[in-house]
Image (cartoon, rainbow, N blue to C red; front, top):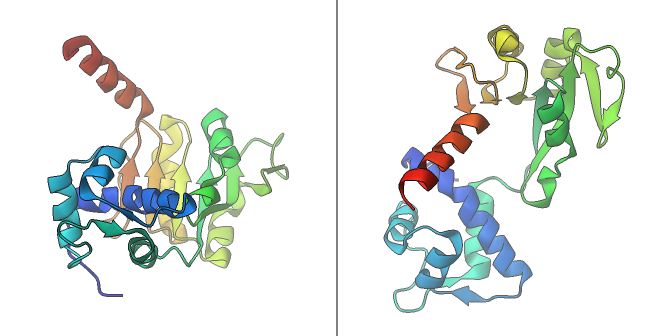
Length: 209
């Protein structure tokens, strides 16, 4: 499929559009107006039109969007026909919760393997995902051709593990550690700081009621 040069903010909204059109398809909805779509995904209609404009003409003025063609478009755009294998490093409370979350219900992501250094859980399975010793990290990632890893280790160990992931060939890291890890430019890092998000939410509640 043609590669589009689009803003990061638009890229981040693509899975949101895909999930909602999947919901509409499952609900036997045939079409939706731009106003209805904007209200449902809580993105203003001007932004949606701008997002969609990067990919050509996806809807019809005065008619809206046909659900099935839009769903198929986003499936192909997000490569939903292919399951993406992901590794998880750090099976603490957060790592355990992520392993028990069924990503496949909403997208094509599958945690294929997890790593930890705790001998009490090595060799076990959580939600059918095997937990291996971190010493096997590089070998396993290379053998299974895994490109993406979720990092849920303590901050004092995050950079060391990130370096090991890069050496193993990982191209993308979803980092839940509060530490901002350093990687080569060829490795994409997305940071998820839950405490920061909560603090930001509370600030808005306190100051913009």
